[in-house]
Length: 339
Figure 1 (cartoon, rainbow, N blue to C red):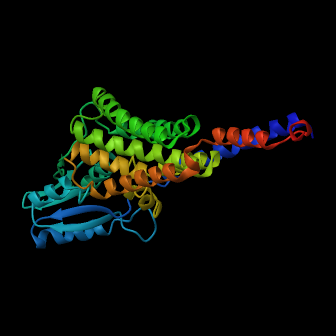
Figure 2 (tube, helix red, strand yellow):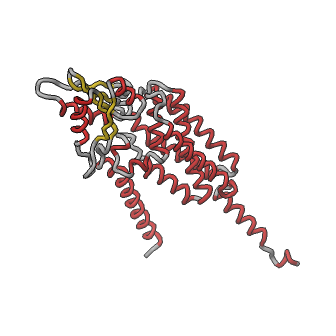
Figure 3 (cartoon, rainbow, N blue to C red):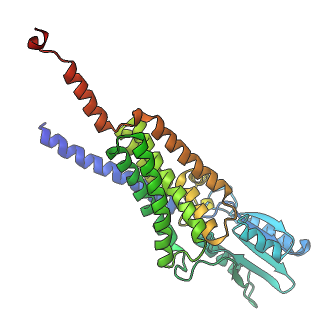
């Protein structure tokens, strides 16, 4: 087999394999999306709320043997609203003498809000329609919430590319650390401004800036740090892990409870899932429920910076190869030199 033919086969097989991995990573979670123990509240007098809670708890989830909803009871409508605004639950059903009312928060998860609207239709009888109130709606410029979900991949991908650039082109620890900090801070300001300008975000700009900076920094530092420790394979591993694995498992377009488990829970322990959750909290819920996500982001950032500090004495692979070659050449003595 000729060298050119081997290269052709390598390219063809390689592209087909990468394509198959991307299809599996992105199409499978989407195809298997559905409610799995989505936390919701039921409010009202016990004698009236109990049958509704039992009915909702009996709704089958996407997976066999699971319930679609994790039903929690609260005292009244005010408590139900507070639970939604504090991000303890994603929706609620309020039972009153006038009939049930469904409360949703499309800013938390448009997919769950839509599912609850369908549930409201099932709770309706022929003589009345169950009203649905959006307690925390999406911005008017992004009524379906698709803009924030669609912006996740380019945000993560460019941050990963930033990590590759830091590893490949900067040769000292100080320069690499400075670049990671600069990328995080600059993108932390620019990205929320762009999303606000196009109507995807409509509040919490200062808090969102901080969260996006933390997300970008954690991704950039992780990729650059893995490259510093493991070389080019490490940087490639970082990109695959954060783009190919973390992104589709983040639940950005739906909710973590809509992703096949335990992958949805794993996604929240990675920068993308934690970042999306924290951005939603900062932009729409005054930061409520973001503590766990911020801890995850900070952990990844610290780990990435530690790898950058410890890895390969701060030299890029190319710089190390050049340095090693120079030392090798210098150590070789010719007969004339010996003479």
